[in-house]
Length: 118
Image (tube, rainbow, N blue to C red):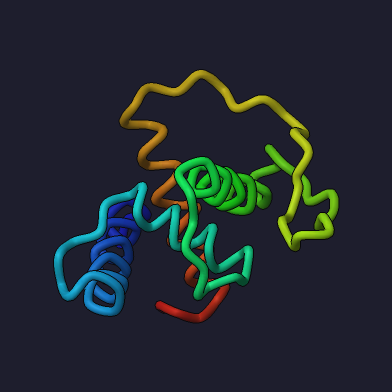
């Protein structure tokens, strides 16, 4: 099976599972899944977040997702429990479609690592 087909199948499985678990079956988009990962990484699940905090959660998720690719490295957790990352390498200039594929691949790998999907 080609890598692209496997990624597509895993992505669809992941979207189905997360959508059923968190949105009563309405398909979650890429940003919603990134947000969920940010909440998971922060570990403060039952809290209401302000708009700027939601953006920070997405930033945490993106850093965590791209860490295995060498773009970020974990630095420390602050006194409020928020993780901080350093940029190791600038992301290359990618077209929108290429960014989407990179993020979907990173998300699928994240959930494979967490054993949420196989």
